[in-house]
Image 1 (cartoon, rainbow, N blue to C red):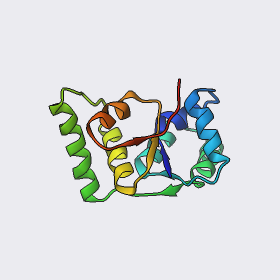
Image 2: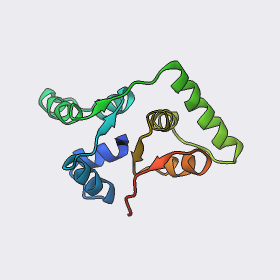
Image 3: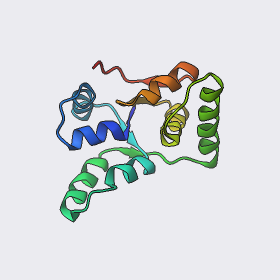
Length: 133
């Protein structure tokens, strides 16, 4: 069970052949459950101005199972941000902390091409998908 970060979705939608995208495409063609959440959908759709393009992207996103954060998830995300900071690690995006909190809550691996998740996983039990690059 995998949640793909916005960074992977953007590369996928732009047709880039990164290790993350190649792994994502393998997951799309497999029996693995793919997950998303509202903030990832929002980030992906931001900036897509053409209705036709938005519709095509939504079709891809609808293949995913959507999980939504609770108040407790947001509290955990803040704890992740603060816990990393106490270890001398600055996480650049609170959204990444929220996605990490959801991943831990639902026992999901995160597929990403964003260094914040690697830093978070050094402090918290966050599972990351292997994608070399």
